[in-house]
Image (tube, rainbow, N blue to C red):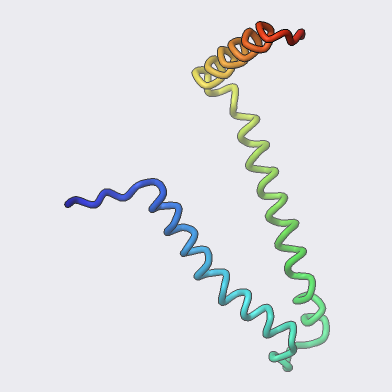
Length: 102
């Protein structure tokens, strides 16, 4: 049989790749929090404690940027915009037939 990778396989391999990257980083972070790297200066130890918050804020900024870019370039997809407008009209008609008013 011929095995053809599917989209799910791609996502699974991305998840495994991410986990294989995250575990060593998490291990280094925990080791640094427990002071196993004793030769670090005190300011570096304080920064290590704040690293998860920095990563969370960075991920939030990245996500908002990607969403903003997607919204800004949405009108450049005329077919998608037209399909969305048709879906909205059908949904509105369906709801109006059930007694909703707009």
